[in-house]
Length: 287
Length: 183
Image (cartoon, rainbow over all chains, first blue to last red; front, side, top):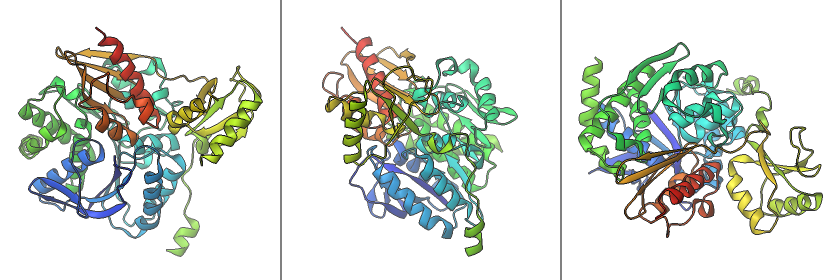
Protein backbone atom coordinates (compact mmCIF):
# COMPACT_ATOMS: atom_id res chain seq x y z
CA UNK A 1 0.00 0.00 0.00
CA UNK A 2 1.01 3.60 -0.64
CA UNK A 3 1.17 5.82 2.44
CA UNK A 4 1.49 9.60 2.24
CA UNK A 5 2.85 11.72 5.10
CA UNK A 6 2.22 15.45 5.21
CA UNK A 7 0.48 18.41 6.75
CA UNK A 8 -2.73 20.32 6.26
CA UNK A 9 -2.86 24.09 6.72
CA UNK A 10 -5.14 24.09 9.76
CA UNK A 11 -3.37 24.24 13.14
CA UNK A 12 -6.43 22.72 14.83
CA UNK A 13 -6.57 19.64 12.60
CA UNK A 14 -5.78 16.51 14.62
CA UNK A 15 -3.26 13.83 13.75
CA UNK A 16 -4.89 11.45 11.27
CA UNK A 17 -3.66 7.91 10.62
CA UNK A 18 -6.31 6.46 8.32
CA UNK A 19 -7.04 5.25 4.79
CA UNK A 20 -8.32 7.81 2.32
CA UNK A 21 -11.85 7.66 1.01
CA UNK A 22 -12.95 9.17 -2.28
CA UNK A 23 -16.71 9.40 -2.76
CA UNK A 24 -18.45 11.61 -5.32
CA UNK A 25 -15.21 13.47 -5.84
CA UNK A 26 -14.88 14.30 -2.11
CA UNK A 27 -11.64 13.22 -0.47
CA UNK A 28 -11.73 12.35 3.24
CA UNK A 29 -9.56 10.65 5.84
CA UNK A 30 -11.17 9.46 9.05
CA UNK A 31 -14.20 11.57 8.12
CA UNK A 32 -12.16 14.77 7.75
CA UNK A 33 -12.68 16.46 4.37
CA UNK A 34 -9.46 17.19 2.49
CA UNK A 35 -10.14 19.80 -0.21
CA UNK A 36 -7.34 19.10 -2.69
CA UNK A 37 -6.54 22.74 -3.41
CA UNK A 38 -2.84 22.84 -2.59
CA UNK A 39 -0.06 21.20 -0.60
CA UNK A 40 -0.38 17.65 0.67
CA UNK A 41 -4.16 17.47 0.03
CA UNK A 42 -3.42 18.23 -3.66
CA UNK A 43 -0.88 15.40 -3.74
CA UNK A 44 -3.36 13.10 -2.00
CA UNK A 45 -6.13 14.08 -4.40
CA UNK A 46 -4.01 13.21 -7.44
CA UNK A 47 -2.69 10.02 -5.84
CA UNK A 48 -6.21 8.89 -4.90
CA UNK A 49 -7.61 9.58 -8.36
CA UNK A 50 -4.65 7.77 -9.94
CA UNK A 51 -4.93 4.78 -7.58
CA UNK A 52 -8.66 4.50 -8.31
CA UNK A 53 -7.93 4.65 -12.03
CA UNK A 54 -5.21 1.99 -11.71
CA UNK A 55 -7.45 -0.30 -9.64
CA UNK A 56 -5.23 -0.35 -6.55
CA UNK A 57 -5.98 0.57 -2.93
CA UNK A 58 -6.35 4.25 -2.16
CA UNK A 59 -3.41 5.68 -0.21
CA UNK A 60 -3.16 5.62 3.56
CA UNK A 61 -2.92 9.15 4.97
CA UNK A 62 -0.65 10.19 7.84
CA UNK A 63 -1.54 13.84 8.35
CA UNK A 64 -1.49 16.57 10.93
CA UNK A 65 -2.40 20.25 11.09
CA UNK A 66 0.58 22.60 10.94
CA UNK A 67 0.62 26.27 10.00
CA UNK A 68 4.40 26.47 9.93
CA UNK A 69 5.25 26.50 13.62
CA UNK A 70 6.35 22.89 13.35
CA UNK A 71 4.42 21.59 16.37
CA UNK A 72 2.14 19.42 14.25
CA UNK A 73 5.05 18.12 12.16
CA UNK A 74 7.00 17.14 15.27
CA UNK A 75 3.97 15.33 16.72
CA UNK A 76 3.61 13.44 13.44
CA UNK A 77 7.34 12.61 13.37
CA UNK A 78 7.06 11.14 16.89
CA UNK A 79 4.03 9.11 15.77
CA UNK A 80 5.91 7.81 12.71
CA UNK A 81 8.93 6.82 14.79
CA UNK A 82 6.60 4.75 16.96
CA UNK A 83 4.35 3.11 14.38
CA UNK A 84 6.39 2.67 11.18
CA UNK A 85 8.46 -0.35 12.29
CA UNK A 86 5.23 -2.38 12.48
CA UNK A 87 3.64 -1.11 9.28
CA UNK A 88 3.81 -2.84 5.91
CA UNK A 89 3.71 -0.03 3.35
CA UNK A 90 5.30 -0.75 -0.02
CA UNK A 91 5.61 2.92 -1.01
CA UNK A 92 6.04 5.75 1.47
CA UNK A 93 5.89 9.39 0.38
CA UNK A 94 6.84 12.41 2.52
CA UNK A 95 5.65 15.87 1.60
CA UNK A 96 4.92 19.26 3.28
CA UNK A 97 6.55 18.84 6.68
CA UNK A 98 8.63 21.18 8.81
CA UNK A 99 12.24 20.44 7.76
CA UNK A 100 14.07 19.13 10.83
CA UNK A 101 17.27 17.12 10.42
CA UNK A 102 17.13 15.36 13.77
CA UNK A 103 13.53 14.22 13.29
CA UNK A 104 14.26 13.26 9.68
CA UNK A 105 17.00 10.94 10.86
CA UNK A 106 14.84 9.40 13.55
CA UNK A 107 12.04 8.74 11.06
CA UNK A 108 14.48 7.31 8.51
CA UNK A 109 15.83 4.95 11.16
CA UNK A 110 12.29 3.75 11.83
CA UNK A 111 11.70 3.28 8.09
CA UNK A 112 14.87 1.22 7.79
CA UNK A 113 13.49 -1.30 10.29
CA UNK A 114 10.39 -1.89 8.14
CA UNK A 115 10.30 -5.27 6.44
CA UNK A 116 10.42 -5.03 3.52
CA UNK A 117 11.77 -1.49 3.34
CA UNK A 118 9.30 0.59 1.28
CA UNK A 119 10.22 2.60 -1.78
CA UNK A 120 10.75 6.13 -0.53
CA UNK A 121 9.56 9.31 -2.23
CA UNK A 122 10.26 12.77 -0.84
CA UNK A 123 9.16 16.20 -1.96
CA UNK A 124 8.80 19.66 -0.38
CA UNK A 125 9.95 20.15 3.22
CA UNK A 126 10.89 16.56 3.90
CA UNK A 127 13.06 16.53 0.79
CA UNK A 128 14.84 19.61 2.18
CA UNK A 129 15.52 17.75 5.44
CA UNK A 130 16.65 14.63 3.56
CA UNK A 131 19.18 16.70 1.62
CA UNK A 132 20.39 18.56 4.70
CA UNK A 133 20.86 15.29 6.59
CA UNK A 134 23.17 13.90 3.91
CA UNK A 135 20.82 10.92 3.49
CA UNK A 136 19.38 11.73 0.07
CA UNK A 137 20.63 8.49 -1.42
CA UNK A 138 18.35 6.51 0.92
CA UNK A 139 15.45 7.71 -1.22
CA UNK A 140 14.14 6.29 -4.49
CA UNK A 141 12.64 9.50 -5.85
CA UNK A 142 12.86 13.24 -5.25
CA UNK A 143 10.53 15.52 -7.22
CA UNK A 144 12.07 19.03 -7.10
CA UNK A 145 11.06 21.99 -9.21
CA UNK A 146 13.75 24.15 -10.83
CA UNK A 147 14.34 26.26 -7.70
CA UNK A 148 14.57 23.19 -5.50
CA UNK A 149 16.97 21.50 -7.92
CA UNK A 150 19.29 24.49 -7.51
CA UNK A 151 19.07 23.96 -3.74
CA UNK A 152 19.93 20.25 -4.13
CA UNK A 153 22.85 21.24 -6.35
CA UNK A 154 24.22 23.74 -3.82
CA UNK A 155 26.04 21.63 -1.27
CA UNK A 156 26.20 24.50 1.22
CA UNK A 157 22.58 25.68 1.11
CA UNK A 158 20.48 24.64 4.12
CA UNK A 159 17.26 25.77 2.39
CA UNK A 160 16.32 27.08 -1.10
CA UNK A 161 16.20 30.57 0.46
CA UNK A 162 19.99 30.44 0.85
CA UNK A 163 20.87 28.98 -2.56
CA UNK A 164 23.88 30.80 -3.95
CA UNK A 165 23.20 33.12 -6.86
CA UNK A 166 25.65 31.52 -9.27
CA UNK A 167 23.76 28.24 -8.98
CA UNK A 168 20.26 29.65 -9.15
CA UNK A 169 17.76 28.02 -11.43
CA UNK A 170 18.13 28.42 -15.14
CA UNK A 171 16.49 25.87 -17.39
CA UNK A 172 19.51 25.78 -19.68
CA UNK A 173 21.65 24.52 -16.81
CA UNK A 174 19.40 21.77 -15.45
CA UNK A 175 21.68 18.97 -16.61
CA UNK A 176 24.68 20.59 -14.89
CA UNK A 177 22.68 21.02 -11.71
CA UNK A 178 21.54 17.39 -11.77
CA UNK A 179 25.19 16.31 -12.08
CA UNK A 180 26.22 18.62 -9.28
CA UNK A 181 23.46 17.30 -6.98
CA UNK A 182 24.65 13.72 -7.51
CA UNK A 183 28.30 14.69 -7.18
CA UNK A 184 27.66 15.90 -3.63
CA UNK A 185 25.29 13.06 -2.68
CA UNK A 186 22.30 15.37 -2.52
CA UNK A 187 19.91 13.57 -4.88
CA UNK A 188 17.72 10.48 -4.56
CA UNK A 189 18.35 7.45 -6.79
CA UNK A 190 15.96 9.05 -9.27
CA UNK A 191 15.04 12.71 -9.78
CA UNK A 192 11.91 14.02 -11.46
CA UNK A 193 12.69 17.69 -12.10
CA UNK A 194 9.49 19.62 -12.76
CA UNK A 195 9.75 22.65 -15.03
CA UNK A 196 9.04 24.06 -18.46
CA UNK A 197 10.68 20.81 -19.57
CA UNK A 198 10.20 17.95 -17.10
CA UNK A 199 13.28 15.76 -16.76
CA UNK A 200 13.74 12.32 -15.26
CA UNK A 201 17.34 11.74 -14.22
CA UNK A 202 19.61 9.49 -12.24
CA UNK A 203 23.32 9.51 -11.45
CA UNK A 204 24.12 8.78 -15.11
CA UNK A 205 22.32 11.95 -16.26
CA UNK A 206 18.98 12.83 -17.80
CA UNK A 207 17.08 9.68 -18.80
CA UNK A 208 14.03 11.23 -20.45
CA UNK A 209 12.29 14.56 -20.97
CA UNK A 210 8.68 15.67 -21.33
CA UNK A 211 8.00 19.02 -22.91
CA UNK A 212 4.66 18.81 -24.68
CA UNK A 213 1.91 19.72 -24.58
CA UNK A 214 2.79 22.95 -22.85
CA UNK A 215 0.25 25.00 -20.90
CA UNK A 216 2.32 27.94 -19.73
CA UNK A 217 -0.25 28.95 -17.11
CA UNK A 218 0.43 25.78 -15.14
CA UNK A 219 3.72 27.25 -13.96
CA UNK A 220 1.78 29.80 -11.94
CA UNK A 221 -0.79 27.39 -10.51
CA UNK A 222 -0.20 26.22 -6.98
CA UNK A 223 -0.34 22.43 -6.68
CA UNK A 224 0.61 21.34 -10.21
CA UNK A 225 3.88 19.94 -8.91
CA UNK A 226 1.97 18.16 -6.16
CA UNK A 227 -0.29 16.43 -8.68
CA UNK A 228 2.75 15.13 -10.60
CA UNK A 229 4.26 13.76 -7.40
CA UNK A 230 0.95 12.23 -6.36
CA UNK A 231 0.57 10.42 -9.67
CA UNK A 232 4.21 9.30 -9.60
CA UNK A 233 3.65 7.77 -6.15
CA UNK A 234 0.56 5.91 -7.38
CA UNK A 235 2.42 4.62 -10.44
CA UNK A 236 5.36 3.43 -8.33
CA UNK A 237 2.89 1.63 -6.08
CA UNK A 238 1.22 0.17 -9.18
CA UNK A 239 4.54 -1.43 -10.05
CA UNK A 240 6.19 0.79 -12.64
CA UNK A 241 9.93 1.29 -12.32
CA UNK A 242 10.55 4.60 -10.56
CA UNK A 243 11.99 6.43 -13.58
CA UNK A 244 9.13 5.30 -15.79
CA UNK A 245 6.59 6.27 -13.14
CA UNK A 246 8.10 9.76 -13.07
CA UNK A 247 7.99 10.08 -16.82
CA UNK A 248 4.37 8.89 -17.11
CA UNK A 249 3.27 11.19 -14.26
CA UNK A 250 4.90 14.21 -15.89
CA UNK A 251 3.32 13.40 -19.23
CA UNK A 252 -0.11 12.78 -17.70
CA UNK A 253 0.03 16.11 -15.83
CA UNK A 254 0.61 17.90 -19.12
CA UNK A 255 -2.28 16.08 -20.78
CA UNK A 256 -4.51 17.02 -17.85
CA UNK A 257 -3.42 20.64 -18.28
CA UNK A 258 -4.24 20.50 -21.97
CA UNK A 259 -7.71 19.19 -21.18
CA UNK A 260 -8.31 21.75 -18.40
CA UNK A 261 -7.12 24.74 -20.46
CA UNK A 262 -6.10 26.70 -17.36
CA UNK A 263 -5.22 30.36 -16.94
CA UNK A 264 -2.72 31.60 -14.32
CA UNK A 265 -5.59 32.04 -11.87
CA UNK A 266 -6.91 28.47 -12.22
CA UNK A 267 -6.90 26.24 -9.15
CA UNK A 268 -5.81 22.63 -8.88
CA UNK A 269 -9.41 21.47 -8.52
CA UNK A 270 -9.80 22.37 -12.21
CA UNK A 271 -7.13 19.83 -13.11
CA UNK A 272 -8.09 16.78 -11.03
CA UNK A 273 -11.19 15.70 -13.01
CA UNK A 274 -8.99 15.32 -16.09
CA UNK A 275 -6.37 13.08 -14.50
CA UNK A 276 -7.94 9.68 -15.35
CA UNK A 277 -8.15 10.43 -19.10
CA UNK A 278 -4.69 12.01 -19.03
CA UNK A 279 -3.20 9.07 -17.18
CA UNK A 280 -4.83 6.55 -19.51
CA UNK A 281 -3.32 8.33 -22.52
CA UNK A 282 0.15 8.65 -20.99
CA UNK A 283 0.20 5.01 -19.89
CA UNK A 284 -0.92 3.80 -23.30
CA UNK A 285 1.92 5.74 -24.94
CA UNK A 286 4.44 4.41 -22.44
CA UNK A 287 3.69 0.75 -23.19
CA UNK B 1 13.45 -7.26 16.53
CA UNK B 2 15.21 -6.45 19.82
CA UNK B 3 18.64 -7.26 18.37
CA UNK B 4 17.77 -5.33 15.24
CA UNK B 5 17.07 -2.29 17.36
CA UNK B 6 20.25 -2.77 19.38
CA UNK B 7 22.51 -2.92 16.37
CA UNK B 8 20.78 -0.65 13.91
CA UNK B 9 23.00 2.15 12.73
CA UNK B 10 22.16 5.78 12.92
CA UNK B 11 22.30 7.31 9.46
CA UNK B 12 25.74 8.74 8.72
CA UNK B 13 25.63 12.50 8.67
CA UNK B 14 27.55 15.01 6.65
CA UNK B 15 30.04 17.33 8.34
CA UNK B 16 28.14 19.56 10.73
CA UNK B 17 25.19 17.21 10.15
CA UNK B 18 23.37 17.84 13.42
CA UNK B 19 23.65 21.56 12.80
CA UNK B 20 22.75 21.57 9.11
CA UNK B 21 19.37 23.10 9.88
CA UNK B 22 20.63 25.65 12.40
CA UNK B 23 21.35 29.34 11.98
CA UNK B 24 23.21 32.01 13.93
CA UNK B 25 21.79 35.29 15.19
CA UNK B 26 24.43 38.01 15.35
CA UNK B 27 23.91 40.99 17.67
CA UNK B 28 25.57 44.33 18.22
CA UNK B 29 26.52 43.70 21.84
CA UNK B 30 26.42 41.09 24.60
CA UNK B 31 23.48 42.71 26.41
CA UNK B 32 21.34 42.18 23.34
CA UNK B 33 22.45 38.54 23.14
CA UNK B 34 21.46 37.98 26.76
CA UNK B 35 18.13 39.74 26.32
CA UNK B 36 17.34 37.78 23.14
CA UNK B 37 18.40 34.50 24.71
CA UNK B 38 16.16 35.09 27.71
CA UNK B 39 13.20 36.02 25.56
CA UNK B 40 13.51 33.17 23.05
CA UNK B 41 14.07 30.60 25.79
CA UNK B 42 10.95 31.82 27.56
CA UNK B 43 9.05 31.37 24.29
CA UNK B 44 10.19 27.74 24.13
CA UNK B 45 12.77 27.94 21.35
CA UNK B 46 15.75 25.60 21.44
CA UNK B 47 18.64 28.02 21.24
CA UNK B 48 22.25 28.04 22.37
CA UNK B 49 24.71 30.81 23.15
CA UNK B 50 28.10 30.28 21.52
CA UNK B 51 31.13 31.98 20.05
CA UNK B 52 30.88 33.17 16.46
CA UNK B 53 32.71 31.38 13.62
CA UNK B 54 35.68 33.31 12.17
CA UNK B 55 33.76 34.19 8.97
CA UNK B 56 31.46 36.51 10.92
CA UNK B 57 33.05 39.93 11.04
CA UNK B 58 30.23 41.91 12.63
CA UNK B 59 28.74 42.06 16.09
CA UNK B 60 29.98 41.01 19.51
CA UNK B 61 31.78 37.86 20.57
CA UNK B 62 28.64 35.84 21.28
CA UNK B 63 25.98 34.56 18.89
CA UNK B 64 22.75 32.59 19.32
CA UNK B 65 22.29 29.30 17.51
CA UNK B 66 18.66 28.68 16.52
CA UNK B 67 16.46 26.54 14.18
CA UNK B 68 17.09 28.27 10.86
CA UNK B 69 13.89 27.10 9.15
CA UNK B 70 11.92 29.17 11.65
CA UNK B 71 13.92 32.33 10.94
CA UNK B 72 10.91 34.42 9.98
CA UNK B 73 9.06 33.66 13.20
CA UNK B 74 12.09 34.24 15.45
CA UNK B 75 13.14 37.39 13.64
CA UNK B 76 9.61 38.80 14.05
CA UNK B 77 9.63 38.09 17.81
CA UNK B 78 13.00 39.80 18.20
CA UNK B 79 12.00 42.81 16.12
CA UNK B 80 8.76 43.20 18.09
CA UNK B 81 10.83 43.23 21.28
CA UNK B 82 13.23 45.82 19.89
CA UNK B 83 16.12 43.32 19.78
CA UNK B 84 16.55 42.85 16.05
CA UNK B 85 19.71 40.94 15.11
CA UNK B 86 22.41 42.60 13.03
CA UNK B 87 22.65 39.55 10.85
CA UNK B 88 21.23 36.03 10.45
CA UNK B 89 23.39 33.36 8.81
CA UNK B 90 23.21 29.60 8.29
CA UNK B 91 25.63 27.46 10.31
CA UNK B 92 26.53 25.53 7.15
CA UNK B 93 27.79 28.68 5.45
CA UNK B 94 28.12 31.86 7.51
CA UNK B 95 28.81 33.81 4.33
CA UNK B 96 25.59 32.68 2.64
CA UNK B 97 23.01 35.37 2.15
CA UNK B 98 19.31 35.21 1.30
CA UNK B 99 18.40 34.91 -2.33
CA UNK B 100 18.21 38.31 -4.01
CA UNK B 101 17.50 37.29 -7.58
CA UNK B 102 13.94 37.46 -8.84
CA UNK B 103 12.33 36.07 -11.95
CA UNK B 104 9.36 37.99 -13.30
CA UNK B 105 7.13 36.43 -15.93
CA UNK B 106 4.43 38.38 -17.73
CA UNK B 107 1.42 36.28 -18.79
CA UNK B 108 -0.41 39.27 -20.25
CA UNK B 109 -3.26 39.71 -17.79
CA UNK B 110 -1.23 38.16 -15.00
CA UNK B 111 2.25 38.68 -13.60
CA UNK B 112 4.23 35.97 -11.79
CA UNK B 113 7.18 36.73 -9.53
CA UNK B 114 9.54 34.03 -8.27
CA UNK B 115 11.98 34.36 -5.37
CA UNK B 116 14.00 31.23 -4.61
CA UNK B 117 11.45 28.40 -4.40
CA UNK B 118 8.35 30.62 -4.08
CA UNK B 119 6.05 32.08 -6.74
CA UNK B 120 3.20 34.55 -6.46
CA UNK B 121 0.86 35.42 -9.34
CA UNK B 122 -1.20 38.61 -9.53
CA UNK B 123 -3.95 39.74 -11.88
CA UNK B 124 -2.52 43.03 -13.12
CA UNK B 125 -5.76 44.96 -13.64
CA UNK B 126 -7.10 44.36 -10.12
CA UNK B 127 -3.83 43.61 -8.25
CA UNK B 128 -5.57 40.47 -6.97
CA UNK B 129 -3.39 37.56 -5.86
CA UNK B 130 -4.65 34.59 -7.87
CA UNK B 131 -2.05 31.93 -7.11
CA UNK B 132 0.84 31.02 -4.84
CA UNK B 133 3.01 28.03 -5.60
CA UNK B 134 6.28 26.39 -4.72
CA UNK B 135 7.82 26.00 -1.29
CA UNK B 136 7.99 23.07 1.03
CA UNK B 137 7.41 24.34 4.56
CA UNK B 138 3.95 23.90 6.07
CA UNK B 139 3.19 27.60 6.29
CA UNK B 140 3.06 27.92 2.48
CA UNK B 141 -0.41 26.34 2.04
CA UNK B 142 -1.51 28.23 5.18
CA UNK B 143 -0.37 31.59 3.79
CA UNK B 144 -1.74 30.79 0.32
CA UNK B 145 -5.20 30.15 1.74
CA UNK B 146 -5.15 33.60 3.37
CA UNK B 147 -3.73 35.58 0.45
CA UNK B 148 -5.43 34.18 -2.64
CA UNK B 149 -8.41 36.29 -3.63
CA UNK B 150 -7.11 39.39 -1.84
CA UNK B 151 -5.42 42.34 -3.47
CA UNK B 152 -1.80 43.25 -2.83
CA UNK B 153 -3.16 46.16 -0.79
CA UNK B 154 -5.50 44.31 1.55
CA UNK B 155 -3.81 40.92 1.82
CA UNK B 156 -1.87 40.16 4.99
CA UNK B 157 1.89 40.26 4.41
CA UNK B 158 3.57 36.84 4.35
CA UNK B 159 6.10 38.18 6.86
CA UNK B 160 3.26 38.85 9.32
CA UNK B 161 1.55 35.45 9.13
CA UNK B 162 4.35 33.16 7.92
CA UNK B 163 6.86 31.40 10.13
CA UNK B 164 9.54 29.77 8.01
CA UNK B 165 12.18 30.48 5.38
CA UNK B 166 9.62 29.61 2.68
CA UNK B 167 7.37 32.29 4.19
CA UNK B 168 10.33 34.67 4.14
CA UNK B 169 11.03 33.91 0.46
CA UNK B 170 7.36 34.40 -0.34
CA UNK B 171 7.48 37.79 1.36
CA UNK B 172 10.34 38.82 -0.95
CA UNK B 173 8.28 37.73 -3.95
CA UNK B 174 5.26 39.60 -2.53
CA UNK B 175 7.25 42.84 -2.13
CA UNK B 176 8.61 42.47 -5.65
CA UNK B 177 5.07 41.95 -6.99
CA UNK B 178 3.97 45.15 -5.20
CA UNK B 179 6.85 47.00 -6.85
CA UNK B 180 6.11 45.52 -10.28
CA UNK B 181 2.38 46.20 -10.08
CA UNK B 182 2.66 49.78 -8.86
CA UNK B 183 0.54 52.21 -10.83
